[in-house]
Length: 128
Image 1: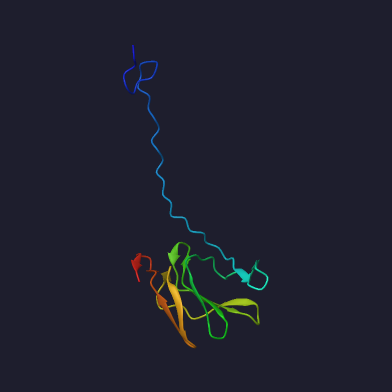
Image 2 (image 1 turned 90 degrees about the horizontal axis):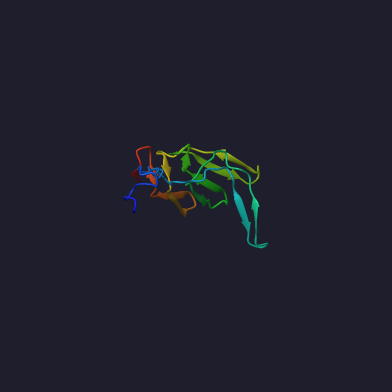
């Protein structure tokens, strides 16, 4: 005779383990800076960022300074702004942003202006 559905060979129901709950919101947070050299078609490691961040906005100033704005630090939007000083070969923190933001885009508008557009503000997760 055939076993009833859900029963094993011994006549008892077999409990199947429940599938584990899976959440995938993976974001790599690190301090690394990779630099691409167009002339040699190669990547090299740059001076590490002062803070482990992800989702930071960045732009190059009219003077050639690399600037990072906001991003996630410890999983929360940040107001940190950092500048890379080529002559000292080092990062320094500059004035903080007026609001913490992650995932925004930075667009240089002129010699002394930049627009920070979009992203997520603060810890509430409101869109900017």
